[in-house]
Image (cartoon, rainbow, N blue to C red; front, top):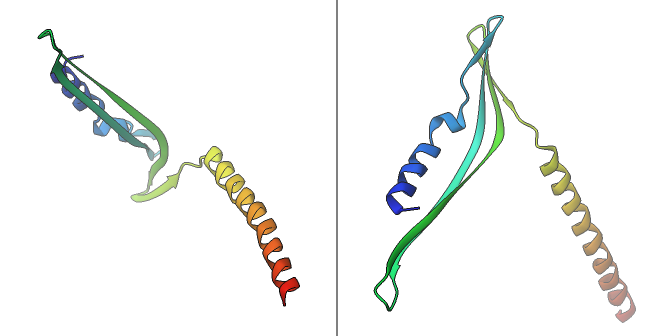
Length: 116
């Protein structure tokens, strides 16, 4: 992909439409879904010893649900999306850290008790 094509593609990919969905209205309630969007890219150009030139690049984008705005009777309320996988991963890491440090602290306390 040429660098100018990469920049154009990146501009098209990172728009407000990627973050906020089209509003959905039913029974007087409007819902606007939102997402967290992140992207990155890079490119370069150069030539080799034979004088051949080349350029290229790449772009990646990642999106995940963030929640939704709910508009009812003139009141706006934010309802966050719950990422169960992230919660399980965080709790699992906390439990592992607790178990590893607990054993180490018990050993340190036992050594301190023997030396005094």
